[in-house]
Length: 247
Image 1 (cartoon, one colour):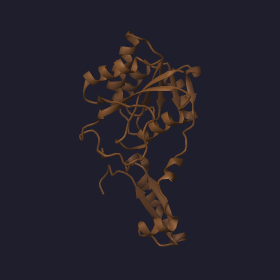
Image 2 (tube, one colour):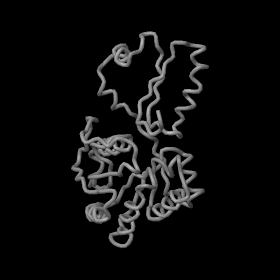
Image 3 (cartoon, rainbow, N blue to C red):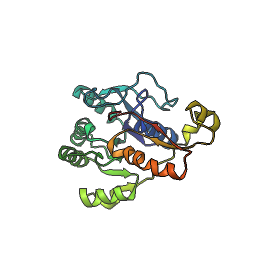
Image 4 (tube, rainbow, N blue to C red):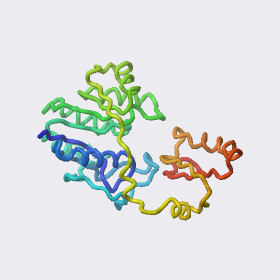
């Protein structure tokens, strides 16, 4: 059975990337052996405005052991992580922000000079929604050290081929899975949940879910809401997400 070495976001950290990492590894049980490396410390507050919890509130865990080795700010920990990762048959990395580029680039550069294990990048984003020229440069340099790319949409495949010069046979579309596991958590009825959030039974709830950042478009939803309410006064919005903008 192939051994996949992977840097993952691990509980107690939260967010979609952590959930994706756990669910992917668990879903592939019996298909591959996993050699995981997790984070001991992520970004400082000056970079990351979100919450970094100390307690796992997600109720999900990796099937395999996931030692917490990597410190985002510690190159020594990056080298330590590589020594673990090189024990696998391939190296798999989740790419979603150029802020991780110094860590990933270092590990992949060590791999290119040493064991030369095949490298697969799952690109959740190619570049940030709020990007700058430095982000682009770091993305290009890191991508030069990868062999295959997994993306979740055909348009990202085309972008990697046309804008980054990747060979079509090396870019693979695997559509994003569902979030059905969330349904295992809540046993309350819709009526009970409406009461919990102080809505009426007749209210029609629109859920905005995710980071509250400009690129997510919450301001467009709020600006459009009066027109919606004119036609149906029972429509209400529930916002669930970390606040990165002013209230």
